Length: 345
Image (cartoon, rainbow, N blue to C red; front, side, top):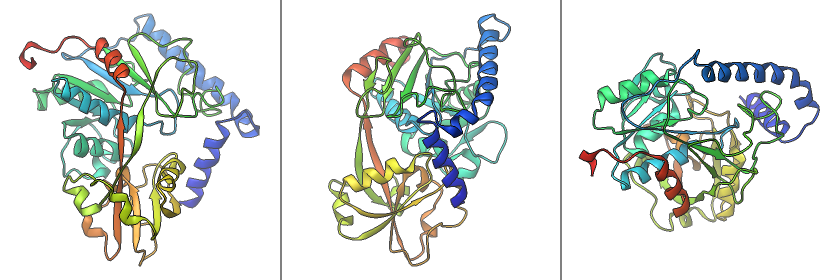
């Protein structure tokens, strides 16, 4: 487990520069780039076709691998759409799930069956969620099971070209395009566009723009912490909740692609933490900290895989993000969507 996390960290670092490891992987990147180009050419030529469903589709994705902030972006978009009168639902691949086929995710669905991020979207977004590797089939199942849904948000669907879309949000973090190379020599899932693609809005989950593409900055911070059992009951952090953890030793645990970002956010709040990084999408089959650990703080993505009864004698705290958009982003995104159906007015 530690070796896996260590290699993932090493690869993430290699993607920031054109060093020996990245250069050694370049031939595989050329092969990957050829396959990406061929696939897109087939869609442009009409040999392969995108399929539309009967309601608008908004795709959230990123051009780079390694956790740029799609899930908090999706959660914030769900809130924006609901405030605008839409009834959104979500489709997602469900990374790491053991089940096959399309699944309608319920609040009691185990993360092993739904995937950790889809379950988090179901619990925190309080909207219908369907998962499946075939996003078109998942979107149709979502509409069939939840006919009130009048817009589908596709989480991590930027490269799933078979699902037609009305708008898309491209999410970058402070890494930008990294070393500018395609996977596995670099972080790019597809080549960087020269300009903002049609029907797209760029969002930077960072302090400043990290590519040449014009876009908007996300409003991001730590909302506070809440006890695990209260989080599962739907509670949100109380004002100044972080104060209760200052001055006591904490073990910070994160099964993320880039856990250091989470650790830095906790330290910025004046917390005394020990770091315990885990591989992205860690399954928490067993609790990965020593027995007797008094206080553990972890992310919401980790919390969906730990039911309160497993906490034993220690205290587990869930750190929640405060994530949102400025008015210009909201205006630009909403302008890409068709008018809401008359029955929603």
